[in-house]
Image 1 (tube, rainbow, N blue to C red):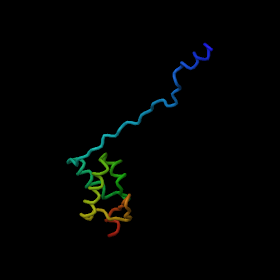
Image 2: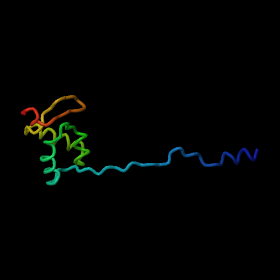
Image 3: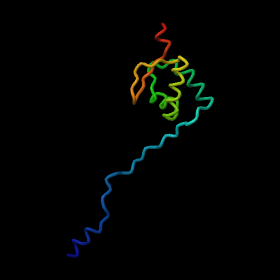
Length: 97
């Protein structure tokens, strides 16, 4: 009975190695540098979504949605697909050509 009880005293096996993804530190406020980059670069993007702006400009998702609404209002981009979860935009210059 003593050897069986000794086997249960072992530490439980850990299946995970504990790899943790780094948390992204994206901007939550539009500063001058990001604003300039937004105005200059978005005109050349063929596909513009929230994820594209978050990835390329390192901004927050809610800030990206506000920027897209503002750019559409200014006429820089135009909406291609409107859905409750995802809006897809393209550059407005391509339609004029």
